[in-house]
Length: 331
Image (tube, rainbow, N blue to C red; front, side, top):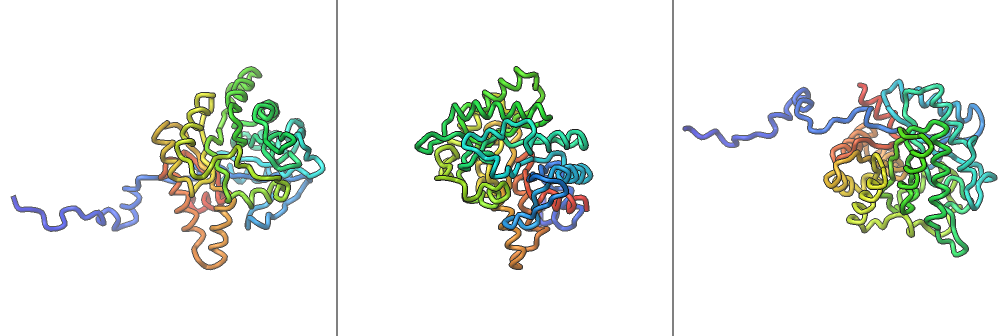
């Protein structure tokens, strides 16, 4: 038998034409993989650009509904809501989180009334509601109290579920809160409300623009390292995920995204459950800064970044680039 001419295998053959690259693609990205984070503010007909997030704005509830319709028309299946609570409604105990007529609940009801086919994911944590900027209740020494905070988070989750939330997403990193919330949802008849746990949320330097968007920058006393994860740790992330799944989480999230692709891959391989990533505000802002500086082209940067999340094992990605990406993917 005559040996095949060198080289017998040419991997470039399948890359030689666009149709072939499409046919052989191992990973597919679509608009259905995207969740669009939205910021809510008071008023009517209000759009407030967020200076630290070029192209991102806070919207009053009517504007949130319009964004929901935009998501529906682009094939984005879900939006994530975050309130910019006025400072006069922020308190030490974050009690506005329990108000059935707070910004979050008003936006949930409006979306489910006007755009019921779009899923609504709601953040459960107290930092948008506290005067000190922490995700929970603090003692006199400034330490965030785990169990007392979890009790309030349960009330917050029930408040949002009653308003019509489809996915409750606890982002606080209190121990045991997923189980407490799952039990309360079941007891109140909210059996089909999902929990997407921020299971591996790191104490990251990439959250700054988000804090501007929800009005909490400058409020934080101390830092969040006593409850958010140490960026040095990976095995601990797997432990966190295991606990949240055992407590009833339907899916888990890794946050931030790009600096933690290794964590996403390890979680997916270990547990084989739906894993989501939050492409956070600092990551978004870096892409926009690169574009503004002429260091990169937005379309390519956005799609390559989102593809990286899918390739690592994500079922979906929360990203401020959701609309831009959906339009690109629609051709």
